[in-house]
Image (cartoon, rainbow over all chains, first blue to last red; front, side, top):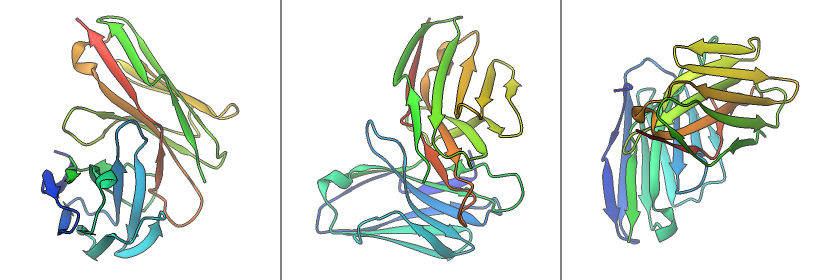
Length: 114
Length: 115
């Protein structure tokens, strides 16, 4: 257990569905991230939140909509996805301060778009 | 922005042998270089990291070396065991901007240790 919990672990959705991924951390971190992990590609950073404010949107299509209601929770709202969006979606958190910049990852949500 | 290249993409060794994975990075301002291990069905987990004021760091069978001049760093695993089999990712932290935790990852190396 890394202290970062993602739900659900697996999700199958149709292209017209709307679903949400949830991430929760109780490590006292101030930064949270969404990454996309596709086969044979590096982890791709999608969004970054620092102190609940979005500081990075890495040219992600608008069919992915993040939400960070507080420093412990991060959501990724999904709508009208495409089959190529099927991937493992990883949440991570880290602290902003000092030298401790280790990122802790959740176990991911395996998303399949049909 | 930062760009990280990792090699090899796959590595197969016999139990007890050493394994070496190499990464290069592009941004000379990067100052933090972690290595992550990802087992099947799990998220990446930090196994060792190094900062730019250090050239080498060791933790039991795992060591990392950093050459800032050449902008490359390597992971060394000695006396490999079957449980070392996993995907390994290197990363570099881009020191600029406001996002201090932001990491750029390499493409990953699938390490297989044969008993």
